[in-house]
Length: 445
Image (cartoon, rainbow, N blue to C red):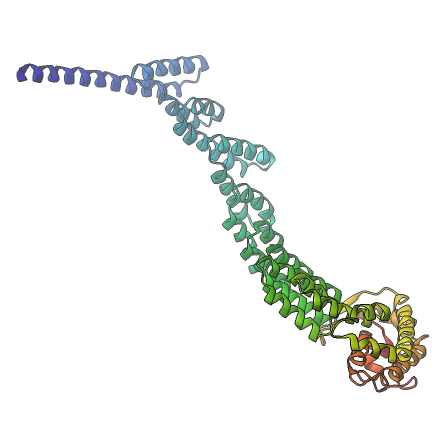
């Protein structure tokens, strides 16, 4: 019995080997016919040989696999259309391999043919897409543009974006940064495109170092970076852009509140109280939900805005109720100050528009030197009235008998640069007179 099984098994093996041998011969024959086909100059004979090769491959059991072999043969002769046709007939894996080969050749041709570059790259991206290799293909094209230099970085970025290749996008940004100067700032929009916190911080820090504080704020704000927002707000205050600083402080408070960090918000509010930025402190306390202190500092803000009636309404029934009587007691002086402030504001509103620039010595904003003559022409006719108004301010701040109200009025009038030149910034005692002051001493901003 065992001998019969052994004989049967041996016979089957002989049959299989003979069959495989026959198939191998057919495959070999197909490859040889295909080789000869591409030596034919006559198109008809070439096609006939290809068909004979196909029959041999089919007989050899390569009905699907032969398409990759035939596609490669056409590709070797740079017949991309026929190569693509045969690759499309392959199974999925082989099809992807073949289409990537054609796409790569399209890319190579594109970078050697400026006239047809766009068309060839479009064809390449279509083939990469069909092969499931869009990201790989786009990165490769991006790399080719990157290697061409910074004049081609925009196109490199387009393809890196298609590939969603963050590392390569940042590589372009870092290249600009390494160049330094104005070139470094070209990286900002690129880093914003990446959009991660790390990238936005890098962009914000770069803008901050380049003194482009508005752009720095934009980056920090998008990322919700409290540290960056804080230093930008502080810088705005330092250079005299107080309204911009206030907006950033509010954004900072909102950022803190997203993580329920009320302690940080209240600390920010206390710092603004100390700086006597009462309107801002009120808004920040409101963000923290502390309505008692929000109301308190809103009343102080109203007082500093010389809206005495609103200030008294907000103070009544609170711990600052005593200030209501102090306002009423000093109302004679306060009304004179209000009138003087109105007159100074009128002069300020009529000041000719001039460009502002950062003073390299103080770091604060000042009128541009090239516009100085415009300001001198304006202020030379109103120098004496401004000095008179400020001396009147001195005479009416000094007798206020409440230290809190007096300090707020000093802070209020110190908003004008002229005040600290004509008067002592702390006591408001006169320092200059109409005869000893210059035109530049009375600038109101």
